[in-house]
Image 1 (cartoon, rainbow, N blue to C red):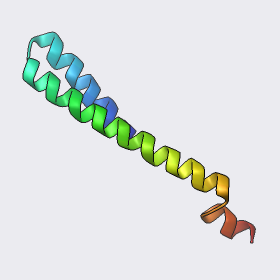
Image 2 (image 1 turned 135 degrees about the vertical axis):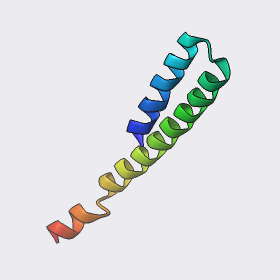
Image 3 (image 1 turned 120 degrees about the vertical axis):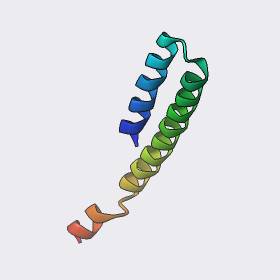
Image 4 (image 1 turned 120 degrees about the horizontal axis):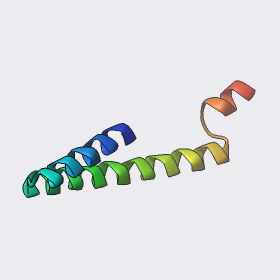
Length: 61
């Protein structure tokens, strides 16, 4: 997910440099959305890991 956010951010930068404002705004919006989703999923997984829920707990039991 982070990979796609970076790709869309690069597309937005290139489109903005070439003068394609609409495409740049759309790609930047998608990049922001994907990065936000990445952060939410990362925090959820960190909390689950801290609580000991998931594969690591099963491997230790």
